[in-house]
Image (cartoon, rainbow over all chains, first blue to last red):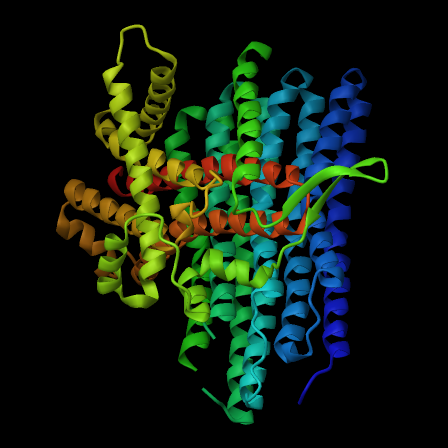
Length: 250
Length: 83
Length: 303
């Protein structure tokens, strides 16, 4: 069955909508957590309001990175693709899968980054003297938790730009296998980043919290944070491997 | 490699299963290992003299809680390559 | 605080300037910028050349596939003789990728060797700046090693420092925008062999300190270790996770820089991305790889 350009456009627009729609949910929740903790911190420690406000703004900006990734992918899906009718089912499935991958993939990381930022605001309110160290730790932790969002972004880019056009003489069974494999790749990395992103966010939040309580133990806390975050990321890496296999090995 | 429609549907559902298996299977271990690491950060901050013991416990706990993720990986690879 | 920061800031600024100059000079950059006046206004616009992102991705990441599709003779910057030898060994399919990878690894090795010789020649009681940097790296890693493994096993430090410096230089060398330059860690073979080596070192140390029979019992004796099947799978997954972490992060950075720099016509934005993915992610991943290797060793040899 041949597809026209309109069919591929439907898939791309659907993917774009899913991408930014799901991606915006937890970006909002994460930023809200940070703002809430920041406001509560200012109530408790009105003298340090400038520092808390700065931490809050920077934390919110970093927590929205995954949401911005989702926005980029949906922009690419709307404006940055070449409509070719010979792309066929492969292109349609790839566009839908790219939207699913980045949309689901930004849920966990932004929730985690939101928790990390919230704990950092709380911690700055408790210990305004060590505000800079806490903010640095918060930024590193949020960057760690966005790593899995970067994996989702890579898979989405590959789905949009490196899936070949459908060959002319190809059987229906082969078409179904390849298209479903592409969608499964998107689902794999999309759900796979959810847990690690949240988990690493929890690690970063606890580390920021403890850095406010015991500022002398900074190197040990940061080392444990790096190590724990790196090990928690391994399931996201397994998802990435499976997604690569589903895109390229079939 | 050309497949008939029925073969294609079987293979396609195996692949969809592989994607969902790895995706959902990564959810629990990720959150769990993050919880372990967060608590380890707390523990090291509270008693820094036991740092190496806590780090070792953290790694062993994470390795055990990662086992379900590894099961998912094995099942996903089986679904991709053996059907 | 400000005194501490200023040299770092200066380095970053110098890096910015060098990067901008190199990006403008390198003919590899796909979009030519045109700077000039148009209708009385200053404008920067790009001249679109024939450009296909899909082909570019294939050329960058699956170079053998690219040459197979296009049937061109690949551009060899080194010697033709070496390339032909590779073609005889690996066949036409893997020749270009292998050649590029080995050339990059050779460059990294030469950089490390020359740095080591230079530092060694200029060793002094009152250290110069370069000596301070390397002594700082060595002593801080030595501190980690003696903290995790114990003071008496600090002789693992050279291995750990070598691992760190090698991976770090590998991650940094890809930032130089010269055609054909890439991070060797972007090719899966390099992280996979490094990870395999780490597991070999781990088991070698375990056998050395616990004895071969004691160590083997962890994997065959269900009474001593009820989860022994899990441990066998875990050994394989150790290699997979430690190597794919490095590979995925570096490859992800490279793909994002490539795609974004082809979408955005301004040159400034990719430089910021290069700073983040090159310096920050590269350093963190090198550190994480080293620390994971160290803790894998420590779990086996300290009981």
